[in-house]
Length: 192
Image (tube, rainbow, N blue to C red; front, top):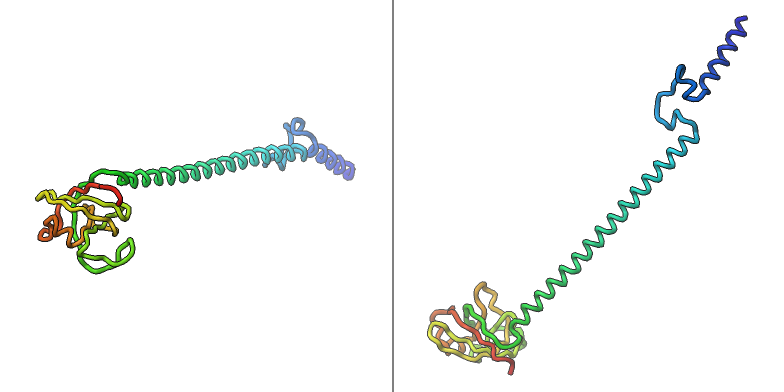
């Protein structure tokens, strides 16, 4: 009798364990993650859904990164173009005739000039930051009205506020040797 009772209990336990969740609602229930408690088919389907969502998210992120990189590259490209255009514009300002206003200084030290050769303090020459070599300009001292025509053959001055650096002789012609630095107007005459 005992053997039959234990066998019946074992069969009932086995049947109860393998019944569906609806049938086993009154009895045993699985507590845990869905992939543990559900049937293998459900678990595989859940895994597929998760993978699909994850891959979609990944693809969206990749697209976003690609777009952001493209935008950054494009903005860098156009900003460099804008900078180049600004430089060209500022360089163009002095190509024809016109006049500039600022301070002038003079120098006399023997040295090499940017256009090639040695500096001659007794020649009517000057240094300017951007004007092409060989450009002739008329420099007028605003304090006394005297002017001199000089040829650009060097680069400078590199001190803020100064626009032209004259040779010693040119500085003597417009009477600025005693002062050293004077306000001037520079009129561009052209090349020749």
